[in-house]
Length: 378
Image 1 (cartoon, one colour):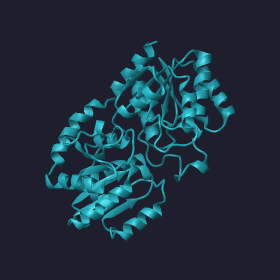
Image 2: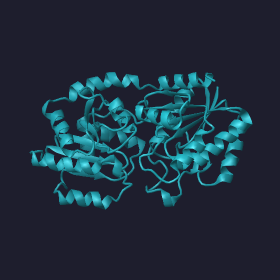
Image 3: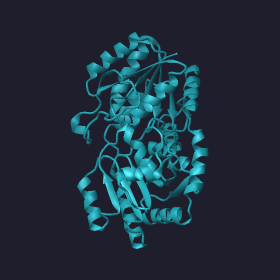
Image 4: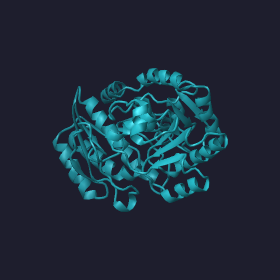
């Protein structure tokens, strides 16, 4: 089968690019796969980050052709023509933001009309976390050309049933990210990062309001009041700020937590991800809202337990009291209790053993087989 994946891919950065690279690799074991990515993914005005391109070592990822301009309709027609010349049997889009609906929808319907290719959308979100005018209309435009869907959480499954009843879809858990290299011994990772604290908890990923870092900082204040001093416990907050970084740092100063919260306020290249996860005892996802999070799949790749809030599909992946703890959202006290319980009941080794068992569910082979099945259904 000839498959074309359309969307974010190296040399662009981020979780979607990592996902598409791994998807192409695993599909490519049995099929002829190519990937087409953006030459302009976002206008600079709408992109809050520092750069849209990956840096550092890329672990043998081949760069995809950069053809797509997300805001130029004439370009979409040209890209559709280029893809059509390759006569794909299946066109795959990773869908997470309605902003791309017009672009993806135009490419999909034109390639489909020219070649008869089937169109599959793999959906991270259908209803986005931060709603904007036009979201539903853009998504409907994109999905009008779809033949089938893969959803990766109960929350997204509910959305597709509600917004697009009768759609042909399968639910497949988000596979584990395996493209960040091997784990590092914990003590070695901490030495590299110059961390001397006995206990380290990790927040990882872009900082946006809905991801709840501010609540986790409040939890750190309560932990300090309970006797967890900076030489005992440190929060490592790693990720580029898509919110006002100064307000988070001000909040930390006001709470007197400058030694207990360490910010690494930048996008982390692939070759540096392992050291942060390897240094941590447990990963914290304090989200206020979510459908799912790829951070759990990175944590599981490194055999790390997770403490997550009970929003979206997080509790489907973090198994409460087995691979971590699940707590109510927007509740600093609940986070405090879970973190204290993790350390005081010495849960790490038990949770790590369970993570190693649980993560076997999240295989790329499962996703590839599902895509093959959907391609055959009419």
